[in-house]
Length: 238
Length: 238
DNA sequence: ACTGGTCCGTACGGTAGTGTACATAAAGAG
DNA sequence: CTCTTTATGTACACTACCGTACGGACCAGT
Image (tube, rainbow over all chains, first blue to last red; front, top):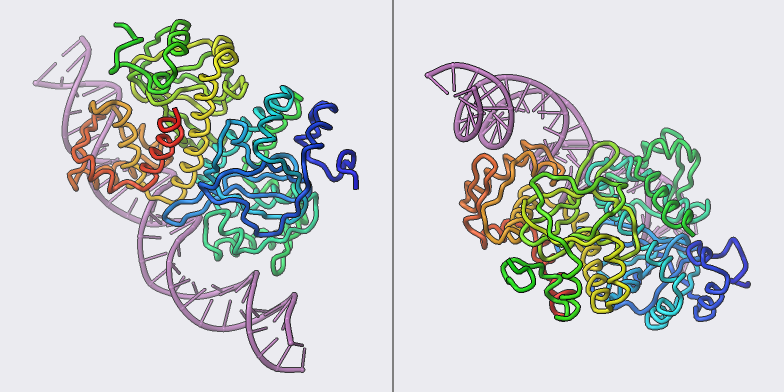
């Protein structure tokens, strides 16, 4: 497969680069296969690569020393992992967990920073993405604090759905509970409520979205807000 | 007063610039007086200035369309307001509220971005600060979700105390409730608990810290973590 | 000294979540 | 086809915080 052209197998962020920059960039990337559940990094780890998901996606999880875990962002083919490289960062403060298996492009940190210096269009794009990321993390903070589990679950399923391009999702209640920062039993209850309303269907780690508009209505406004921020900062400007 | 030399009246971020860069930078700054409660920006507003608090401090508040408000970060003389200018951003996604009156330095956005391009040391510093900010916002998200009001209040009072250099704090329960994202009554209860333990004293909008170590013990670990991140990224590297 | 405004104390019932625990059900391995 | 593992369902007592509401305390102004 030619990753430089296939539209169904690309990274939207890189796609919005000018053609020349994009070719240069891809030339220095390698592809990697990511497995479900794989931990790409723990807080404090040094960042070895910038990663651009193609058909997979990765959760960014804030962890507390007391043990709490809360997903603050998610990167699929609309984004990247290792954003703080853009700020010259060497270590990550977030845990990075592969939530959807698949393929990604990656480039070593040093090489990535080289490209950033040489290619203004790339740097500008990455900066805009980081801006989006900060907004979304802030939004996420408020959302987790104020919205109930059911709405947050709906939002989260939609976000996952977007990043798997409609395939049924491989995700257990246990896993979701870690991301939402609640008990597994709370996820079960919320998931059942959504299922009873015919919005989703699931069985043993496989979730499928039945009624997308309904799910959007059940989710908090944060889902839409997130997309708007992205559209405004990345798509409209590019 | 000569803002270029007075140690008790400076911005720690700018202080860690090389002397020459610092002088250049200060030459293009003006001073402004900020009043308690003043809204510097609402979400969606365009950013007019980069702001560097001297003896005042500003809260960064995430707001939801449903009305929820949650403080995700705070900038005193250890930081700045308008950080996304470093990423080329033109609009803020956070509300900016003056929590402690006082003086700040400011520079117009365009001028600031000029300086960033011309002065690598400045750009590097600002990028590191932004990295800190992102880490702290993520931390904040998890903290607000998992820790109880009393611990979060203790943490918040310590953060305020740091930024007012020990002066008694001018802050009401009402105000705190907005920052912590809880009812005023919840603040009252938590504050009373802290007062009964002799950690703080307050009356009608004036809070003083009596037992700092005790307050640190009552706060969640997030307070210490925040400081460690800052020390590691800004002080140690500079 | 009264008055109005701001701020704090407290109370009540209600609810969404918690920790723990155990039972059931489906998938996969042999 | 059984056994084991993994995933989901459910239950119970409990807690932190909610929305609302009202009374009291302190301060400032006339």
